[in-house]
Image (cartoon, rainbow over all chains, first blue to last red; front, side, top):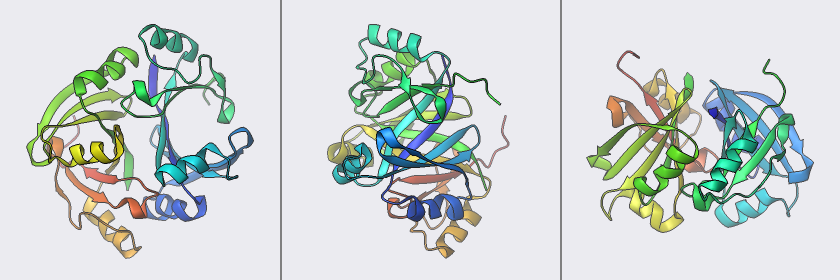
Length: 137
Length: 137
């Protein structure tokens, strides 16, 4: 079952540059900046209500985010939904014919378990399911 | 000040088709389907936590959503943030050099006052600010 939108990922050339709008313009607070080496990205999380805006900046020209920027320019990269059981939900989605990118959950940022669904099955939106295995603070 | 993400707008060819994923796949509940004649779109609102997923289907080939689909294909069209005062926020954003699409709030769906900010100023994201002039239920 889904609980909420966990975050919206936005691909940008520079967190320092795009972050100005989210911090000074919209008044959001940057909670943390984290480098995800496996994805070759630097991420900045801005909190808002129960969800977050995640800015994604490539740290290498062969980062998936660098390729996204080259093809599409800056913009929304994915929506992540918080699930209470990603594994079960992947199983049900697969039975319904949904195209999965990850057949099993994989470790993601912030110690979460995550899996991506293919945009072909979701109205063109790269969709992430994520589950927090640690108890919420 | 922003209170939350009000909704995420996703452009689709068919609400009936894409809605299957959001309803049967993700288990979201469709709250209402509404036609916005001024924008030549039909919209379906699915609630999740404090926010909504809004599917947008064009009702005419000259709808802005039809043009978006032609150019980009299905995918996220905009993010809408709930503000407590859109007019004041537009004024502050303009002073900071943010490029506005609407200089003043205009009437939007659900009786809200809305204004759009240009993707050039927001990391490539068409951004809506909306304000509910009616007291929340």
